[in-house]
Image 1 (cartoon, rainbow, N blue to C red):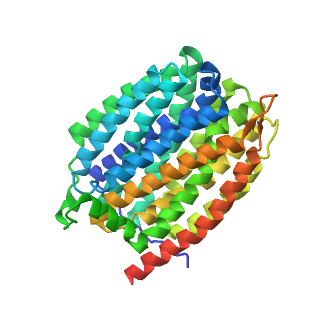
Image 2 (cartoon, rainbow, N blue to C red):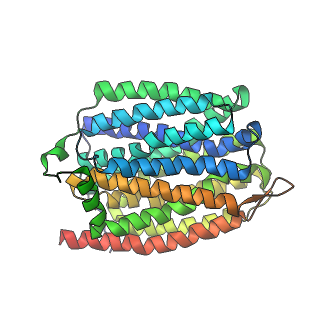
Image 3 (cartoon, rainbow, N blue to C red):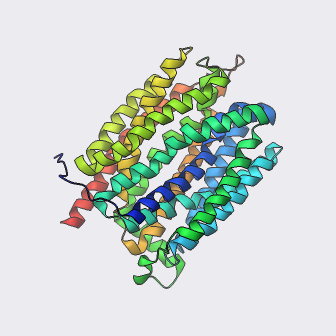
Length: 410
């Protein structure tokens, strides 16, 4: 039954600051990953890369992030989350700087692997901090704001990144992001309070035992499986989105910033609203509405060909509204699945599964999608079919997660 919450608990000043800070960190990590898709049309010819090589660059970033998540999961609940965040964020900044200095396929590939090793853990730490500091009935709003960083990366990061790339080369966005990331690290160091509440709980004697118990808990399985499926379709779609827009839809490269800008503005407006709806009407109903909208729009999107710019913007905007209407309630829901003493390990494993699934999906997409002699992408609609199928199966798994939470509450 869908019921509205009469009043939502207001956040304190420090809670608002933390939400903004976490969203900013997510912005930096997301823009680092997202830049590869729109810059793909520039990077591939600049470094003489094939579609398979480019998909390898994307997938190895994800694979390294996944391995890093698994290796750190056993230690994720043994330290102050602030210190853990600072360590991995520093490595992420160094890796991003390396990407900006790469001048060949091999050096870019290595730089992306290093960046992924550190970036892959940041998202799980951010989610653990959010779950530690906010009650379940407030997490929808928190996730709505944090995930708005994705939209902000489109509104601010991608247009600026494409502008810099068009004028000073594709290296420039990564160099700027590294400089801004260093400033963000100083803000974390000087202003964020320690996050140590989880350290009071008794833990296993070994890090391996902590990881093993996290993996062996049956209540975690459905959430892990849903994460893998929801990631697969998206990672198959995103790496080739800019090439599809330019080569198949006939949109000029100079118009790409407009597409990302207007799509991002729409998502910035709707993201917090989706979060409030998740808290007010229930996370599962909002997830199902978003899933249905995603399936309809991705089917339309992957079958487009030579359409006007306004139509491309409209389809992209509605598609991302659907994707966020899945993502925000799902993350708010699974934040309550692990116990606080296992929250860091759970999120690290979940992040690892997400990255490994994404790496496999990007690698698979590189073999499904083929660049024709006319420059157009072929078989791109198959990616849409995969995303729709994984969304349907994930819908059942998310229902299982919800039932487990209700049983535990009862």
